[in-house]
Length: 107
Image (tube, rainbow, N blue to C red; front, side, top):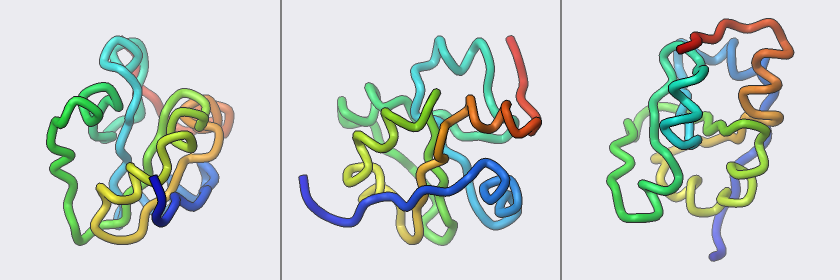
């Protein structure tokens, strides 16, 4: 698949954009049940691949995230196509978010 790819963004940059951007977690639901970023929208890659609608707001910047950034980066073109405008990959995923000391929810 060809097309625009997601740009990398750090956890600190993503956190600073939260008022204007939406976080979209592409990990599986069992992963999100263990821990998640407060306010992130759940859109597992497996469901998107099966044709589930992304239902993302077209007027907001989107920051996609997974556990480490690898799944998001590997699906960069397809995910970028789901966003209506500017879209990013959270470099390092939720692991980088936690490493930066930013809030997460557990359980």
